[in-house]
Image 1 (cartoon, rainbow, N blue to C red):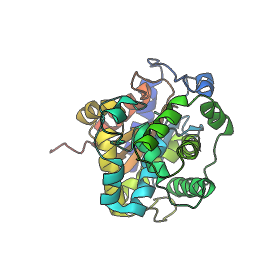
Image 2: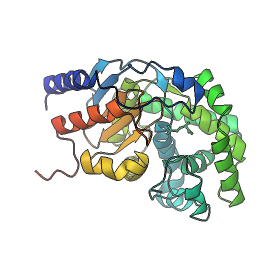
Image 3: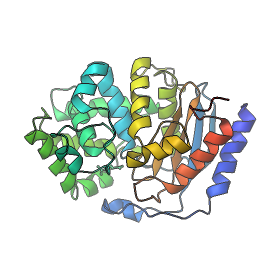
Image 4: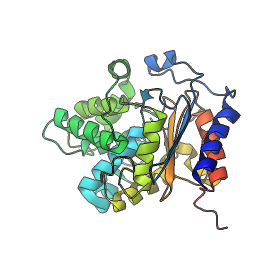
Length: 310
Ligand code: GLN
């Protein structure tokens, strides 16, 4: 579709779901419970750099689990296809994102990088001689994906650090199985920081479009990761980006995507572009209700389903 068509579909998607108020805001991280649930932003970025925005697409929120996709890409760039597969795994756990049982059932193997256990194991693999250095690699790397300097929300970080007993337990469990070499609690600290990075729907679309564009940020022209790493990352998102609902998502929508509990979703159409969505109300798996509906509408309208054969 041409520029005008994408532009009007983006506005139409926003208008269509503006009044939908199904779902609940995440409140297990106390500060997230205070967010205005009516916020709703959409952004579509094409690999040629064309941008289409609607609603609150510039409103900042914490990236949360969507960071897992981009930290994974940075680690793949460093360790390569086989190394990360062996260390972190590539299969969907079929269990909620913060499951401890998934680890216990698999001899402490984290199984996949898109749930907390695998994401913590992935963050531990980020290069650096100290946790401060590792954090800088992540902040700089995710900023390169977004094409601007991302900053952390100190309040979100503090709120989660005061309540994330479960993630600390998961990290200790990984340690007990010998699945993490770095200090487990320092790794949870970095992981919590990466989740507290502030983005908006427009940033998410640019970050996704970089993966759609073989690793080149379509806005800055900078190569962030290799085309092989984009392929590996998108395969992981297809398998597990929407947690235990990933199969259903792929069946209905047909493009890789990643969600976060603050209400963000990025969905990627390889070679074409990406959609960023933000709406805080979530379904029971932790995926934004309006974000999913709007992306489904856009994917249909723009013909993005990877499995469509005509
Ligand atoms: N920081 C959140 C956590 O670890 C991220 C979870 C998510 O977005 N699903 O629980």
